[in-house]
Amino acid sequence: MISLWLETIVPEIALVLLGGVLVLLDAFAPRLRPAFAWITSAGVLMALVIRWSTAAPGPVWEGVLAVDDLGRFLDTYVLVACTLALLMADPYLSRTKARYGEYYGLLLWAAVGAMTMAKANHLLVVFVGLELLSIALYVLNAFHRESILSLEAGWKYLVVGAFSSAVFLFGAALLYGATGTLSLPHLASSPSANGTVAALAAALLASALAFKLALFPFHAWAPDVYQGSPTPVTAFLSVVPKGAALVVLARVVAYLNPQQLTPRWTAALAALAVGSMVLGNLAAIAQRDLKRMLAYSGIAHMGYALVGLVAFGADGVTGVLVYIAAYTFMNIAAFGAVSAFSESEEEPHLINDLAGQGWERPVVSFALSLSMFALAGIPPTVGFVGKFLVFRAAVNAEMVWLAVVGVLASLVSVFYYVRVVYYLYMKPLPKRKPAFSEPWAVKALSVVCVLAMLLLGVFPQALVRLSQQAAEFLGR
Image 1: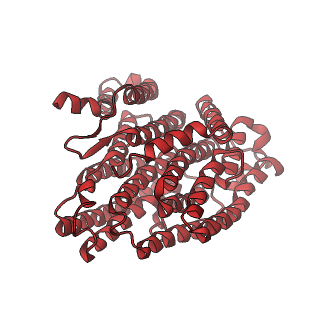
Image 2: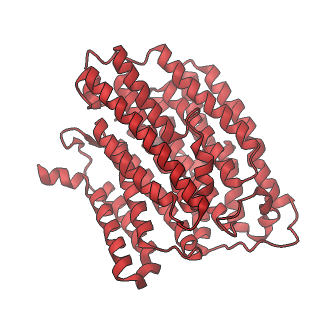
Image 3: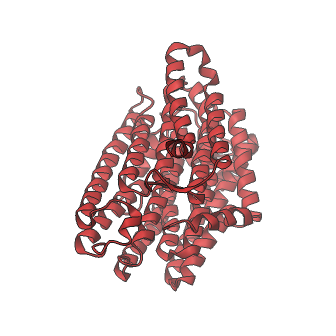
């Protein structure tokens, strides 16, 4: 029995051990540093192969982990995002003279934390995964120790992360006091799950996850952290923790529904979604720094994804899973371009600096342009498919007004997304051409993301089918 349980977490064990090996190699074999990115990428891809080549037995480890189709989907999402972040990390670390094994080890441990969170059926296991993810990201955000901006980003994320972790623990303690269990499946059958204390606990848990998702009004940390963190870290931070937190929130909703999700709770979640969509898009219009613009854009996109959870049901959860998969390629393509169009991490990443670069650096510029169109939800990109599914779920759940707000917010976002494309192709080059680099790894990342955004947008059937199969396991 123990060997069977160990088989279900072989990918996580392998990644944890590989992270430790990379740290030791950095200390005892520093000449291997140029190969660290290749070693890490090979380890991540091997973990992905193992996850899909072994059985998915469902609940394991006394039911605290759910290794099923939903777990596989989320593991794939995390590992693909990790691989894409690694592609853009190596040239960046080489340029900034920070190619250390600790970076790759921390990235792997953060990925394991997200994978653990997404498969957890027990709130203490969720907390363990959350802390592993968060602590690794605290260090990664402040990885440039000589940079004031990076240290500030790490400090701000640490303060907010510690506060949200405390809120999460307090909510879990209250829930245990009310129901006598921290197991999500057991909550569904608890007679106390609809009591006042349990309701307060659920509110605290949702608030803690809203901090990780940067939902309004828990969003204030995102722009400063995005701006100050190393760009590859920002790319990872912008997608992986959010996908894991969305799935945890979906599990909580699934197991408490219908005992506790009264119309008042649905209205509260809808208010979070509307506030995030409206504030994120309006604030993004005023931004001149590309990373800060993408931070506010991320707030809006988590609002769109939350629409699917508000609608819930098979359609809503499927829409959320498709959305986070789409958001991964869209956002990482954008941050890959930000990394390439950067002379120095100490300097602002101004949209004005992109003037005329569309013709000078066509591959990265096209990827950035397509990611802007995809984030705006313009067909035939995968961004359109994600928004269509979550808004359709809201309409089918008789929340037409919520879908209308989402569509109007998307229309507002077109302005600041198209502004980036305008500067790339319709503004003249400045008198002093910026010394931007265009590493082949970033070009490869751009090509992969472009193909994913277009192919999954034109032929979304496979992604939708996988998402539907994964959604069926939610709440079991």
